[in-house]
Length: 236
Image (tube, rainbow, N blue to C red; front, top):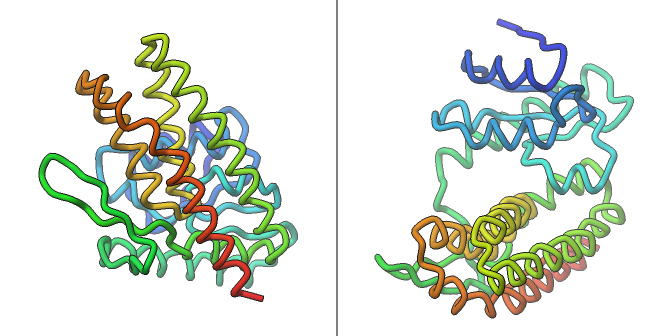
């Protein structure tokens, strides 16, 4: 069954009402932005709906690509055959991630993030995200995603720190939520997990713990970026 939607809000409603094999969105949706549409899909309580493969058409904007949790990106002008290939690859990649959610190569950069239950090892960098971006954009434009992410992460961390200093817990929680999402989309797993931990702690009202952990973010971000840059350099 194929369902078409006129804008972002209708596309989101369709995703709530039915379970699709794949969702194909235009990069510039009316009514609700592509980034927000995908974010809301990923936030659905039903895991099957939240993990639906998403392919973005006409995705040539680097910042939009870095901010959208998609599985495939079809460049402008791609013909039907090429789009079909991208859709098939996206569906296969999502299926593999769903089947093996914990099988991530931690590598030498793995870090220990303590939780109340037990320490959890998270890789600093999972190359899968940038590999997908590189296939769509090429190496040079993909490399440009890194400084843009670094600037965005710096702003979010500064916003969180300022909010913590003023006791504005909802604003700090929102900043950590955005950082967790954007870091995860770039493949910075440890940073994403750290930010998600801060968000969860704030939701539990454990503000002192959040403030005590806040200083570790800059180093974690720098190490993640360094490993991503090393991976890009190794690609030649």
